[in-house]
Length: 476
Image: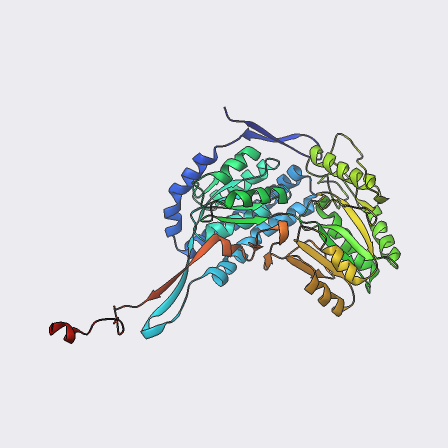
């Protein structure tokens, strides 16, 4: 008997969705059956199908945004932004495929031509996260389908309704039902999907721990593509800014957008030992004004709850652990209602905490670290196994250049937040934040593989060296 699943609204606790866990092997078999026909279609056909999908999402924009807001707890305005990104992803992916994995030819030797074309892998699995239940899996699904792959998608077990809605939009837009399959389920279903022999690759967005486990698993299957997009213990260095008010706004946005549930959120604020007080005061003024409320509240909240009570418990435990290790709270973490996963923004000074945990606290907690000079700031920024996003706020172009050269991250920003990376550029990290398979504009790279062909219309060949002289052979 299939496992029964339910989804609840974080802000209210109301049941939103119920269903049953699926069978990954059965869904992979259906996707395998659909692969030859879908791959045989021209790229133009597949691109036009994706544009019809975008039109379906556009027509259901309000309904989709409302569902995402209710299922994740994020503010409605933010859910609306997410749906807009889903729509915009189609044209960006079409452009990316043409630029990065299109067909090219050039002249070869002896009148031949060299052609480089790309082929789809086959059936790809997509594992999606809960923080962006539409945007992030869509960022894998669209490029994969454009390249001619078929897809089996498992949404996070915490956001099954949003995943189901997304797949319905693809089918209504003209993607054959078996070309994109949905399988619901929890961790065990995800493991079964990832490990199925019938899968030709896996595109994953989620925690660094799960990413490491997948990398180990796929070490024995080098013929399968694996793209990992994981989180980060991201540093934000604030050093000699011209506009303290703007800097405070960037720090606040970097740390607390989406209730800290973005893989690019700033986890560590690195400041000079002397002279950081004014910046911190401005940040605290903004944090005191942050509205934490349900998604549809009026006035609109800056942030909603974290995804569920278990997540809220975990963030609270991590905050307490930092205090027990010597961290000094500047702005304490509060949970107004113990029955709901609302958390208030928190800031804690961890400068003197020894053996500071190198973890991604996936919630509204910002750790302050004071250093003596800019060289120490870069060293502190790199004091992590992660390497997703990093940003420096400074009026000095030279300091930015020094930071860019010295920091280890896949996204390095100047006077901009750590979050909000553009879809028109590659997105990915190093260390345990990824496996050098950046997504966004570069997703096309891992959704198809290049085939090189040397081509001539006629057979023309001769062997000039290493053969016996035929005249000599006749005299024997």
